[in-house]
Amino acid sequence: MSCHIQKYLYESGLIESTGDAYKIMNFSKVLYHGSPKEIKNFKVGSGSGRYGPGLYLTSNLDTAKFYAAGGRQGAAGQKLKADKGFIYEFNVSGKSLVVYDEYETMSDMQNDMEDAENAFSQSGDLTSAPVTKYLGQWADEYHGCHIVWINIKDPKVLSPLNQILITDKSVIKSMQRKKLIFD
Image (cartoon, rainbow, N blue to C red; front, top):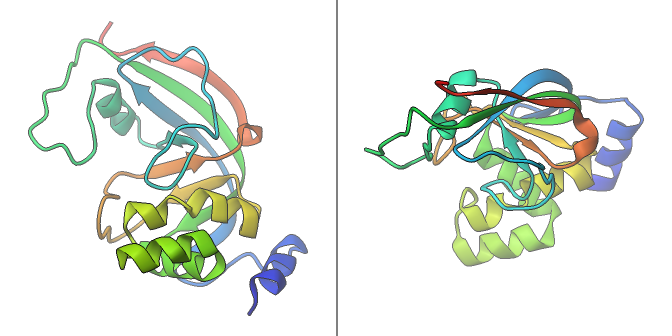
């Protein structure tokens, strides 16, 4: 099925699911962001990350605490600063792309997007950062989703922590600094 027909079917509400690799669904959750530094103004859509620019959140408060204490994914033996850090609570609601299988999702994405296809041609790996960085853009442009929920059951590379990427501030309904950790 061409991406234009698929997009029409999603927009018209005729289908909500894309198969086993990923699904399109309504999303409404309280999410968290942890940072060792205070953030005065979150800039959604800027910055970078494994799945593209946007604001990275988690549904797990312990994961947010890990990042607030200075933790970094994939950094074994790291020393955390348990006496510092900030937790931010977000109420998020909107249409989401939920990724269950990173490899198959990236395969579909690179078939649709020339930039992702070129990155795959150069790296030879669908789950490499040069390819995966287009996921947020693909979710938005091809599926109308400003929320990307990385919910991989069997992570292959760098996705052991539940991650939610927000690509547009319109899905953030409220935000507050929850607490300073270990005050």
